[in-house]
Length: 510
Image (cartoon, rainbow, N blue to C red):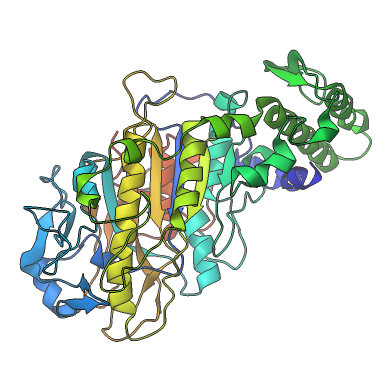
């Protein structure tokens, strides 16, 4: 409880930017999703091998000749590129290497690979776009991770992570039904931080149901010390001053006693101390809400990987493993360790317990050797296919409380790494320019926006700056984060990123 309360320590810092008022009224956008899932690939990837951003004539200049990596085909020529779907408006369509056999996508012989066919199989094109050439502002792993999460390159978070902003924004609407506003499933390279935001926007790490049980299970069979102490009474939820918040809260006698204590110290010191006390009170209410929801039982009863198992995609016929594993080449490489974390993220989203999920895939692209390009091409495309399967599962799941909509319609999935890798063939160094994928609700379909020159440096795109003025410049990480927030339905005045920020045009559906 004390650890969760620490997130309230800097409440006054961002109040003047209106960041702490999650209940700000504004026009509802029916297309805006109510969930955010950030999928992070650690180490820095090479997005040009996944969705090609440049002209076809540039392929021969920057892509090595086709070959193989431990038996898996890598690299491509211009005549192997295909559009994922017909162009949408004046924007370039998503373009990718067709590494699969079009007559039989499951074929893994004769130089074919099913990697990335999942985007076609699950029909994701009309709800996904990619932003290329994003300047992270740094080529240091730690600072670039922070930059990807919050938009500011720094060793420390100078702004809250986009997950926290989204969780805070949605808290007023879902406080009573989503007791875990922001969950981190896995945290390779770091944990996103809710810098200066209320405690309900701070991340809670939930790597597995087993890890939750000692902390959050209300079942005396799991935690015998709760026996006879876990009887709950429902009553109007009260703020620190005893005023109703408009929602109901089920508490035990111990929780009610604890909730009454912070208010007794109001007015004894200064406004900052009072704000800190309010944060503690809010944290205690959040803890009560989590315990009352019995999240362990809910997660246990929720199927994470479901449709992918009951209706296995035929293009995976030659992958003899779990639904989020993959194998390729002569080594028959298996990445079955991805299965538990993907399943946990799906359980959290399907159970409707959370508004924001951070999921890190556990293969590190920080290889630093002459085979870095081949490694990124082979494994990166396989990881992209895993992401397509993840989105396919969301697309096969009805959205809770939204008839006719899928969970994919109600979730924004953002796929990124901390930065890119060097473009020079035979080199594998850090490179500050990267790409960001947006999939799901309120995302414009099949658009490739931005590009690179042959040195891998980002090129200008059209933006709307925070003051509403149009501009054209190279996109920065702050713009990538801003675009995600705008897709989620936030207005410019509802968040703040130091150093300036804008929304990249063409990525938001509405």
